[in-house]
Amino acid sequence: MSNQGPANGDDQDPMEEMFRRMFGDNAPDPEEIQRAMQQFGASGMPFDPSMMDPQMMQNIMAQFQSMMASSDDDGPVKWDLAKQTARQSIAGQDPSVGSFAAKEIDDALRVADAWLDQATTIEAANVPIVAWSRAEWVEATMENWREMTEPVAVSLSEALTRAITEQLPGQLPEELQAAFGQMQPMMKNLGGSMFGLQLGQAIGELAQEVLSGTDTGFPIAGQRMAMLPVNIEEFGDGLSVEADQVRIYLALREAARMRLFANSPWLARDLMAMVQQYAAGISIDVSAIEDAVQTLDPMDPESMNQMFSGSMFIPEPEGAQKAAIDQLETLLALIEGWVDVVVTEAAKPLESAEALREMINRRRAAGGPAEHAFGSLVGLDLRPRRLHDATKLWTIIQEAEGVKYRDAIWESQLRLPTNEDLDDPEGYIKRRKTADEQSASLDDDLKKLLEGGFDEN
Image 1 (cartoon, rainbow, N blue to C red):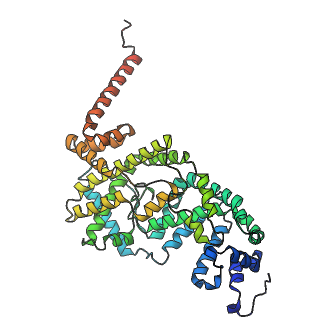
Image 2: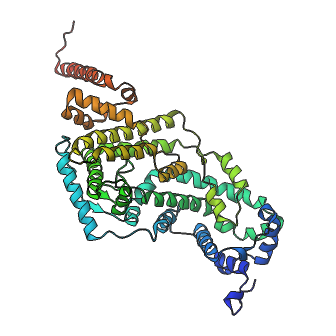
């Protein structure tokens, strides 16, 4: 292949141009690739890049270069590519947050905290208030997403890379194998790059849907109350509700969750521990990956993306992994159920509170497209499936024992309701009192033993 192209760029052979842009001076011979692809063409049609839309070809080349390129990431997953992809997916549709919008968020959260003081005994979270653009949310939360997904990502990317490098060359026509061999050094990046691309796209989609820092149920934004004005505005479109009411209602939910996370530090740790316990038990379906690689077109980056569609390569959880998922879903439901009950009380001054509550609970229970995409990617569903049961449980506890008793439950992991309590919410208080009495009796016996208070007889 000559590196001296025609003087007129318009006369550049499209195949040669495509591979030059892909691989620079190390590009395979385009004529060899052309002959092979004409035999290998999908549905009997020869591959002809001259028929491609120029912008589409440019996008594909950029994506392929990113997937193949080395990076500062030493591990098997390309986290910098994930962040880059997330940022690119929201480019052009992410207005910056102006001072007026930031003040509206600040005002809404301060009103929310004042109203929550009348609905819960858990103190306000003394954390910063921020109003973020989508890109700012991506930047601020990416490290936490990495921590949550890394065990799954590493296992999956390593299995993908192994299957691709071992199987893919043998699937190609003889004419293409020689040229494809030149790409082998770059293929070691492919599994991690594919996962990085997909994770970035899922997080980019989430960035267009999340309303606040805790909207996923996790304190993904860290110790701060964060809200996204552009997403809140889009959420309110078509609801026939005043914008300030929407902001305050969503601020109530954000501030309520942050009270839990700030005053029960073990809560965020337990959530992450459950995610890590789930991830530690992940087993990748290698045979499914191998089957997917059989249909992979190495010259079509879009076919690589499609490998991640559907059920993915993570089998249904069993045993300890299933128990971890159940614990995680229960805790997410308890958090969101408590928030629902507290915010319902605090939001009484809002004329549209009930309509907004119904809208949020429906959205939370069903999950949005981005949540489904994320769940498909790592096998982790962010939705609290038993939200209705948890709301009913907290309501029963509050009516029977009062707000102080209800909120004191969050002081210790040992007092938190279980799946059994969600199945039988009316029996929680009786079971809790019996457990407290048994614990008190054991404490008394231990104290007597230490003080030598038991009779020898």
